[in-house]
Amino acid sequence: MSDAASGSALDDLPGELLMWVLIVSELLVFGAGLVAFMAVRLTDPAGFAAAQDHLFRAGAALNTMVLVSSGFLAAQALRWREAGARGAARWALVAAAALGVVFLIIKGAEYAAKSADGIGWDTHAFFTFYYLLTGFHAAHVVAGVVLLMLVAWRDAVANIQAVAMFWHMVDLVWVLLYPVIYLLA
Amino acid sequence: MPALSNRLIAAWAWLAGLGGLAALIAAGVGQGVPRRAAGAAILVLAVLKARVILARYLDLDRARAWLSGFGWAVTLWAALVLGLYLV
Image (cartoon, rainbow over all chains, first blue to last red; front, side):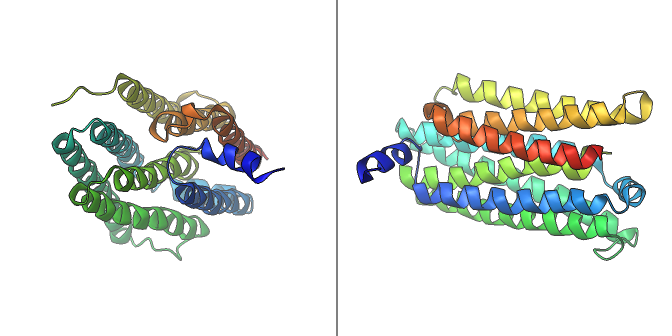
C-alpha cells in the first residue's frame, strides 16, 4: 500500500489522529477491565449480585444524564466556536465543566456512602473492580474538567476540538462502564 | 445566543432516552422482567448509546467506514460481556 493510500483512510478521521490513538487506548484499557470484571464474576456470581445491591443505581443513572448533557455542551461549543460565536462557546465549555463537577459530587457522595457502610476496595472482589474502574474514570473526569476550563480560556478551534474529543471519550467509557457495573444484575 | 444544533439535540435526546430505558429495564428485573433477557437488552442499549456518541459527538458520521469499524468493535466487546454474563 502506498503512503498516500494509507494516509487517506486516516485523513477521514475528524480531529487530531493522536486523540484517536488516545481514545482507542482508553477504550481498550476500560474494555479489558470490564471483561476481567465479568470473568471474575463467574467465580462468585451470588457474591457479586449481593455486592451490586449496595450500589446507588439512581445516582449512577443521574450521572449518565449529567455526563451526556455535558458532552452535548462540549460538542455544541465546538460548533459555535467554528461559527465564530466565541462568547457562547466559552459559556458552553464552562457549563460542560460545571456538569463534570456535578458528576464528581454525585460520585463522591456514592463513595462516602460506601465508606459509611464500612465498604472498602478489599471488602469483596466486586468492590475492588468497582473502585478501580469507576475511580480511574473519575480521574479522567477531573482531568476533563480542568481541560474544559483551560480551553474556555485558550479557545482556539483546534484546542476546543481536542478537549471535546477527550470529553466524549470519557462519556463513551461511562456508557459502557455504567451498564456492566451497575445494571447487569 | 446562537442557534443550537438540531443534530446534537437529537443525539442528546437519544442518549437520554436510551439511558432511561436501560435503567427501567434493570429496575424491572426483580419484578417479572427475565434477568437474562434484561441483560441482553441493557447491553444492546449500551452499544446504541456508544454508537450515538461516536457518530454525533465525535463526528464519525462524516467517516462512515471508521464509524462502522468502531461500531463492530464495541458490538463484539458487548457480545463477549454478554457471553460471560449468560454463562
